[in-house]
Length: 570
Ligand SMILES: *[C@@H]1O[C@H](CO)[C@@H](O)[C@H](O)[C@H]1NC(C)=O
Ligand SMILES: *[C@@H]1O[C@H](CO)[C@@H](O)[C@H](O)[C@H]1NC(C)=O
Ligand SMILES: *[C@@H]1O[C@H](CO)[C@@H](O)[C@H](O)[C@H]1NC(C)=O
Ligand SMILES: *[C@@H]1O[C@H](CO)[C@@H](O)[C@H](O)[C@H]1NC(C)=O
Ligand SMILES: *[C@@H]1O[C@H](CO)[C@@H](O)[C@H](O)[C@H]1NC(C)=O
Ligand SMILES: *[C@@H]1O[C@H](CO)[C@@H](O)[C@H](O)[C@H]1NC(C)=O
Ligand SMILES: *[C@@H]1O[C@H](CO)[C@@H](O)[C@H](O)[C@H]1NC(C)=O
Ligand SMILES: *[C@@H]1O[C@H](CO)[C@@H](O)[C@H](O)[C@H]1NC(C)=O
Image 1 (cartoon, rainbow, N blue to C red):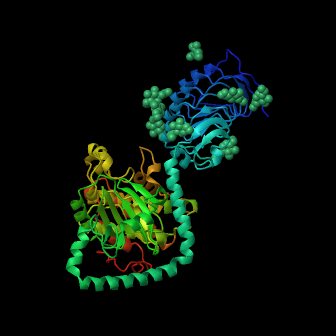
Image 2: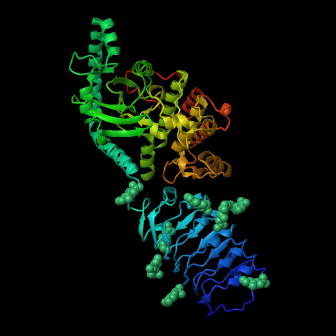
Image 3: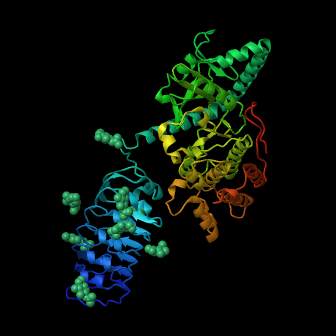
């Protein structure tokens, strides 16, 4: 224990002091405002004393202050907003005092801050959302206060340790177990549905996958044979009755969906989706809702219901017939459609039982990456690249590539979805007026597409690069702040030589000496090439397929899961 000292006034402080460190003494009394005169002071440590009273606002004059540590004292009053004028501050520790009032949102002005410990006080109110803006923050603790409201999402995911937020009566959101009431209803619902899909498919998959697969393959073959036979019998008449589909035809009771391969009625589809019930929604996109449809004969399909008031019926039919011809094993292939009474527009796709890449990555990061090893990540990347490359050689642009639009079939083969749909819908007035919202998704859309409001093959390549980097590093593009993005971050790690930082701990268990590690690095470099700022510097998708195929030596590339699919063009 140190000596018993009491700060008294008048007290002479030497204004040229750089460091004042009197931690672990028994200094009592007030913090003298005159300290503010020591404008050269870089470190002020009075931790673990018996200081009382307020934190003086004069501390704001300490414009060179790097470290302010007043933890474990008996300070009262508010945390003065003026502290945020100490713009070089790197560490601010006032834990274990009796400070009250709210956390000033001006703290976000402290752009150099790396340590912020406000724990064990009596602070109230909400956590200012713009604390998220302090990009260098590495330690953050606000536990044991009186704070309430929702933990800002980005902050919660950056400091994913409940103990940093614990013991606040009314705080909710991630990483605390407590959910926020009615704020994120929609997200929760989505998460729930995804969870159910994953759990259900995971459980049933293991048991049923093999036999079901064989069974459906056999059935499909039979149908194909029957279909071919029927086709031969009366092909001309059939073709015309198909395309006139919809409203009028009643030969088997009720309107039919136009299926490229077999017959399904609208009534069956309504039943299979339980009258388009919310419970059956698989996803919501700007191109309408996607439903899981379980038919009585055991077929499961995915039905997209386009927003009402859509395109003219004849144009819709033409575009749907066109889209139905775009077939590749890494695309979700359109199997049929319906256009009919009042403004109902349906698109039929294969059901993808294994969810999407976004959920897969999320699951993987929760399970320390064991579910997704490097060969699987490589295969997924290659699948996406092949799908996109095929679209590009068919002169189509995806326009909104992101992990949510990468779906997995029963064999975990990647299928791109949500392409070609803008030609099947009429833009809503909101989209039409602000074109920037109609291109892509924040975090994945290329900078030039945001500027021009137009997506191109090159902007698809950029989005692919971001998805690839996310797939390889597990870092989410939206986790970054304005000054940094995933591309800059990866580059920085490579330049600093901190390559192991590219991997989340346990995410990918690669030995830095192994050949897999070299392959991984090659993948990262392909991602960087794709995200070159100048669109002209980016490789084409077929180059990328070539590079990704070359970046792994081992046996790869299983045979196609779907006999209707066509080989990759590359
Ligand atoms: C020190 O600060 C006090 C008020 O905080 C001020 O009155 C005084 O003039 C300052 N002294 C010097 C030497 O700057
Ligand atoms: C704070 O003050 C209380 C009495 O008001 C005292 O019991 C306690 O030891 C003090 N804490 C510190 C760290 O000085
Ligand atoms: C913090 O964000 C709020 C609105 O979200 C804004 O009004 C305020 O100016 C921001 N404060 C700082 C210091 O950036
Ligand atoms: C924080 O920064 C903003 C903008 O740079 C400025 O307007 C505001 O006054 C600052 N707040 C404080 C408390 O320094
Ligand atoms: C600290 O902030 C200053 C300006 O506020 C900036 O120039 C400097 O780069 C920052 N240092 C670090 C390490 O962030
Ligand atoms: C904490 O602050 C509240 C008011 O915000 C006050 O009622 C309460 O007494 C304070 N508790 C302590 C331990 O200072
Ligand atoms: C936050 O502070 C509390 C109390 O000081 C401590 O128990 C906890 O471990 C800290 N959490 C983190 C993440 O440092
Ligand atoms: C949350 O619920 C309260 C009433 O229970 C309601 O007043 C408020 O508008 C709701 N907030 C949101 C974001 O739905």
